Length: 113
Image (cartoon, rainbow, N blue to C red; front, side, top):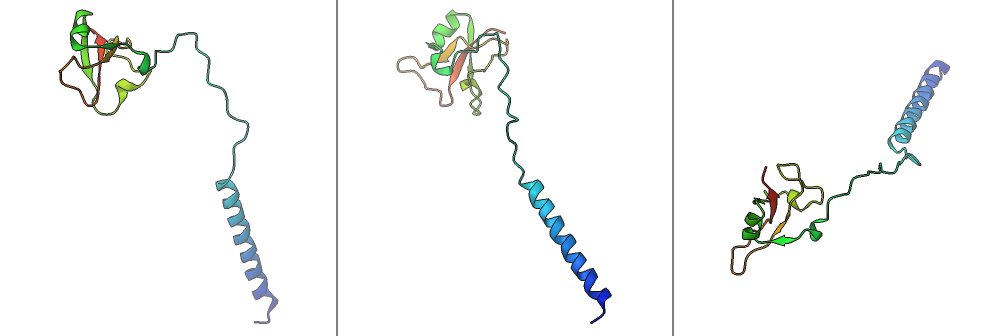
């Protein structure tokens, strides 16, 4: 074991292993700084937030020529950018008529497609 050729490869092997671990740690923990870009500006008017949509009953929706579209449980109709099948935003949120049934997931009044 006193041979110089035996000690040198072990020392080189450990040095290479330590260097590889250091490289892996540095690449895995890198931070990005200053690369964030502002969102692009748009000339179009953003859709009204859900809370600003008018409340309509089912009868009022039908009187406007709309149709009631219920949420399927994913909350899509509650998003401000929700569009109906016609590609237009909803006329308003459906609110239950006095004494009428209440939709658990919610509904909107969409223009006819």
